[in-house]
Amino acid sequence: MAVPLETNLPAFANDISDVARMMLPGGSDAALTHTHAEEDGFWVERCGYGGRTLEWRVRPPEPDGMEREAFALLRKRLMKRAAKQCCYYLLRNATGHAPPWGALTGIRPTRLYAERLADGDPDPERTLVRRYDVRPDKAALLGEVARAQSPYLSAPPDAVDIYVGIPYCVTRCAYCSFKTETVPKDPRGTDAYVDALVFEIQQTRRMMDEVGLSPQALYVGGGTPTALDAPRLDRTLAALDEAFCREPGVMEYTVEAGRPDTLDDARLAALRGHPVTRVSINPQTMNDSTLELIGRRHTAAQTVEAFARARAVGFNNINMDLIAALPGETTEDFARTLEAARALGPESLTAHTLALKRASRLSGDASYVAVDQATAEAMVTMGMDAARSMGMSPYYLYRQKQTVGDMENVGYAKPGRLCVYNIDMMEETVSILALGAGGISKRVRRDPREGLRIERAANMMESRRYIERIGEMVGRKRALWGISP
Ligand code: SF4
Image 1 (cartoon, rainbow, N blue to C red):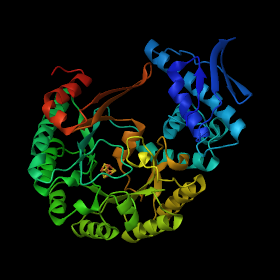
Image 2 (image 1 turned 90 degrees about the horizontal axis):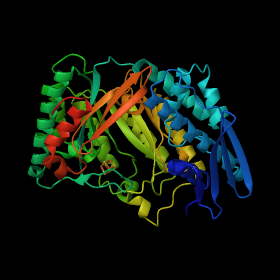
Image 3 (image 1 turned 135 degrees about the vertical axis):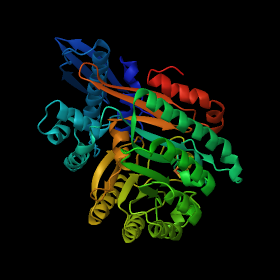
Image 4 (image 1 turned 90 degrees about the vertical axis):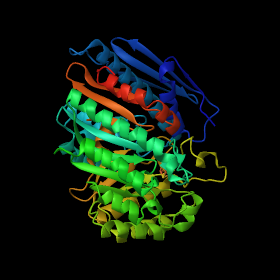
């Protein structure tokens, strides 16, 4: 059930509705009302709900020599923030509900923290608690993440990260909202995709030479890259080596082996035949009944075997992705998963909280009942405690909409084992050239007058259309960097 909304800023209606959904998860018959006005040099937000009203006054920003376009964007962002804060505090007063991340929706907490630091705020954690109602333990976590990231937030101006997407998976997970495709039974069915990808890799290298870009981190994700069979995986990685690994500077090279059942000896040999520095083996849970329920069609024992095989061939930087609050799981189930992960001893761990995205099978499953806030929170805390007990610290953090219990996703790593690409992607400090179906390239520019400017160019989502229009995909990236096709 939704929450009816009336606002005189319709451009912000979706963002205000996100706040209403978070604060009134069961929906409401009563409408939330909001008006924005400019009075005596102030922005005045007025909200009403269920007979209560709240007025919120904010001093608008000054241009301070900014470009007109950049200043207009800043005004819009701050105006939206003021409207959301006013609605949040009104609904907090009306319901007594205080979510762990307070008024923060639709903004990356780490970005807000960095913004506060850049504005000279001596204590961003305190500001987040006082102004945005972020719970002190979450603000402290954010501070820890910000400190871990700070050495990686400035890259040389010519640095760029390379993302390569393989859109295939062996089956579709119940919670998945990505546009993935089931890998064809006959491996030749992926030949046209690999051909197109190799072409895009070569053309991207050519373009990088033309504009003077150097690869910093390489990330092969998806989908499940290891859903490709060993020869096709090898061919893809060989093209990446040729294009991006023949010069000093690539500081890390990750390949996701998302499904442990795809990590056989032949694929591991293919990975070891190239300078891959980090692999991610993602069980999500180590409980077989849950794995079956979420449609992953592998077992916990296969994860243990895949991990041992990866170690045996020499991988010394292995990540594992886990998900808290999976369907039917209790804290005891999650404790078993964490214990199994500890026994394997990965170098890093990404602890997600289940997000119920509309495009997922799970969101339409009437029999699914999400765990309550307290259980989701207990699981997230267990994930953090387990990671810390393995000698890891949090280094990247993000939140998604529709996450059970309004919790967060956190990447933990042992010293020196964090994934720079994960930081770059979340913090948008480095441009990304994204190759393959569904990839979104980002050109990131920072200018004291223009502020942060991010322009994007998306590849086609579907492999068939990506293959058909591969020339156009290359052209879109060239146009993003302002060069002719
Ligand atoms: S392995 Fe990842 S990309 Fe593939 S279906 Fe599952 S969640 Fe989606």
